[in-house]
Length: 76
Image (cartoon, rainbow, N blue to C red; front, top):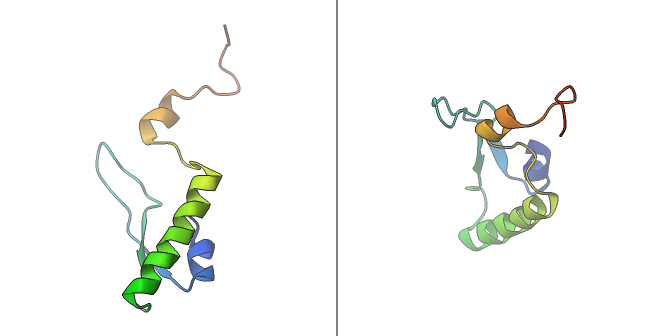
């Protein structure tokens, strides 16, 4: 998800990078739904989830990114 997509739903995000040898993610963030009542939080989260699923993965896990073919890699 993008910060803009959360902003459209009036959900504030803050940076929360993960610094772990196996799952590092400098772009990780936390979305704060607390300004909305509980029932509204669930509906917002469902809408955002549907957007994310429809779009698909934008950032492959680190291991996949390291093993992904590049423009210069030979194909068989």
